[in-house]
Image 1 (cartoon, rainbow, N blue to C red):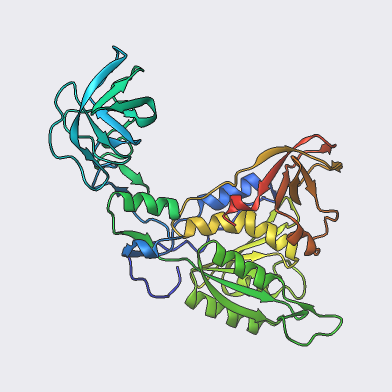
Image 2: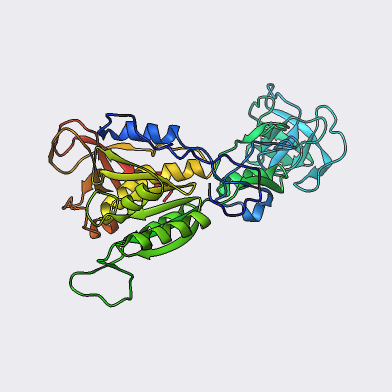
Length: 425
């Protein structure tokens, strides 16, 4: 865990060797890599107590929540009509109407005599002596009497007290990321505040001599930094606190200084580039010299080199430098890892079998992630699989994931499509 202030309950830091692979492990299948990663992580953030409803959107519950009140608190009418005691089996019939009515916010306080009916509006509390409501369209009032022609079961058109939520029901569980719909549930039973995990602080660092921030002058051999804005936007959209660690040149001292700043300010650091074993891969060299690093060679295309490390007590996810590979690995590995570190639930993104409108002969050995989108009930993939083609990222709406087996895909073959929304984006 980072050294930043923790205002909640104490947490347990990750072990320095938590990412170490067993001896002899070489290429790791995607599912196996995900299972290993999941087994080695736990929440690393503290708890903010009594956070009010207005500040809960996107936060993660730290404790189970129990209802202090039933919903609805009283039996009430689901329609505009007339309340009576059911069942109604002998029809046609005529019931005398009593004076008054029951409206939402103004319940009828008296007792409805047996064999009588009373006017009632949607959401109004059922008066004593009634348990059934007839729709006003299904009856007629003539000279103060209710004329009915159809039968009614007891309880028709009535919402029973507590039919949605009973007192002391567990309405939300720890680890739930709160959205407007969950906040509605809290409000419906009168909960003003809950305990939530502090926001995960995620540092984003780009590296490389050839990489320049947008707006800086560039030469023909330099490129603008696409990864840091992309990953930063992902972090904020997922609801975490972004710490911009900037850009580090391919010098060990620059990389080390950036990582040290990240370890002070962050709960997790995302880096892009410099994680292989080349001469200028200073991220992996620095992490090896000053921390604990494990280079996971994952059988995935695009991707493969994924550095998982601990640096001064802070976990580091080292992503590939090519934008498409960085995006794919961030989605598939970093996103569920961040969710778990933040106190939420590890997730497997939902996928849907959709007929392909493309052809592909896939070789065995690696999973492949293809930029894709759905049109007219079929999934199409971007024309180039090159991991530097950023236009394919903007074009796509999700990924087609092909497993490690050899596959021959033709138009109409069902393939697994994962929309970006399945990752929370």
